[in-house]
Amino acid sequence: MSDVDLPRDETPVKRGRGRPRKDASLVPITKEAIAAEALKIIGAEGFTALTMNGLAARFGATSRALYNYVSDRQDVVNMAVELFIRSTPLLEFDPVNWRDTVKKFYRVSRALYRTYPWVAVVPITERVVVDGGPRFIEMMERLLRFYTEMGFSMPQALALVRAFSRDIMSFALQADYYFDRVPEAQNDYISRVVPQAWLDRYPEAEAPLVRESLTLPGMDNDDLFEELLQMRILTIQAMLDSLPNAR
Picture 1 (spheres, rainbow, N blue to C red):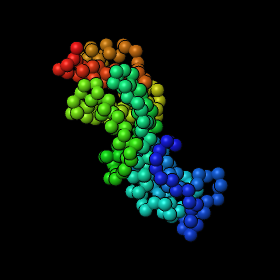
Picture 2: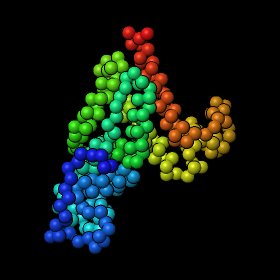
Picture 3: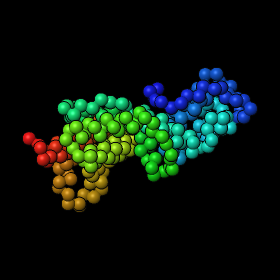
Picture 4: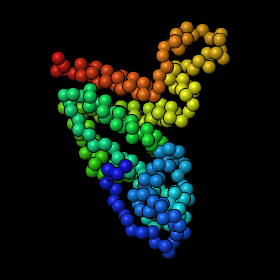
């Protein structure tokens, strides 16, 4: 998370407020450090897990010490989300080799959301006012140029950008978050249309196709992501084929 453009504030903590830190090995309190630690909490546990006391404990200080750098919890949330947005990789897009470009963009973005999956629910759980900065604007410009240079109209390009956001954010919570945290024996609740345990519980259910589907090899979250990626590429190809100048 070092490649971000948040303003740095390396000023030592003012000891007039808050309990002094006793452990010199702890991370110094700065605005950037507060945002980074808050993002770790939010990403792994959700926005409700972020409290000023819990955040301050990570620095070995009281919450009062944080108020030398932030105004309130909302300020911390805003900073954490901005840090996440500005961590979006600034990739090069090649409309000629578009399949490889889409795969790379999806995979790199998935890695970011897999690290901080609960950021995906920010519009639902928090009122956030953030500034994505020029880096994020440039990334969106590159993405829209990529699709329009492929021959898509602006409405089509916007639809593909929105589809990307839904793909990545939903996968982070519905697949990666689950697979990364539950026992392997429970993975079929995500990878199967119906878990084997449910069929065993209701043997009288007439579901021959569901039973047939369970004879196929199981899939982990990497398999599921590649399946999602392939479906998206097929969609883009079908859209290209439908363009007036398609060959």
